[in-house]
Length: 293
Image (cartoon, rainbow, N blue to C red; front, side, top):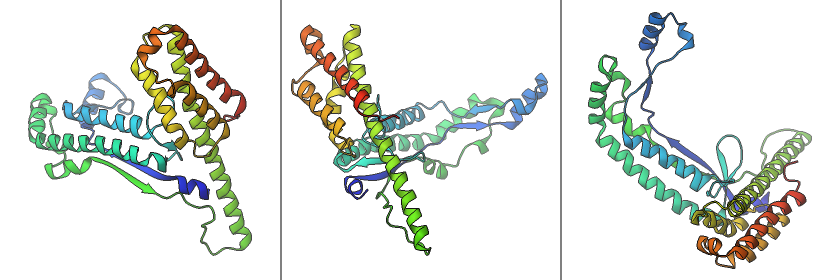
């Protein structure tokens, strides 16, 4: 894993926001009593605000995940899943692009949070009118607390070494710990490589399907393919030979021809060539890899 530690780092994404929703047990009990319902079978939530700003913040959070973090099929981010606890692997080669995009969304989000805080008194006043007798000021964080309920940050960490085990144990037990750590690292690497293959196949299959179906062929379909050609070497952290081969094929066919959606729509021969190559790439990775065994 020494090579991997030189090529990538780990990041944790921290996103949080005020939900603007509050469970109301009194309303639940009232509803249960009025309709003879077991109170454990229902819950009542009050929507404390209809602020469009909260909706915009939620939308940006989605953009951060899909355009900065997630790199699987259907996404355009730069990271690969490292574990199931929200840690991701970021290739060093993509670090500048990642930070550029993330900081852009982060700054836009921070402006929205400040706007929300400025409007907070009005939001509470509006809720007092809309919620009628169910309004409870205690449902709302104080003005001093509300801004702290929003966060958008990244924590960067080095990839740990399986050899760096500092415990006072017999040599045999330390060897076992190192072997277990190495096995876990190998499994993660296989999973990461499989995720890259999944992305390549997903983008190429979508591209070919759009051509073959005769559906409206949009610029973003081409953009995703060109983007894949550009970032694939960095995502191929493991140096997988099959991924290197299909990348070269993709570069020769897609990137080298300066394709656009207009060219694909207007040139049937070109469209067929591109579709055939995309399907070949999907097939090559299916037959040569064994990535998902």
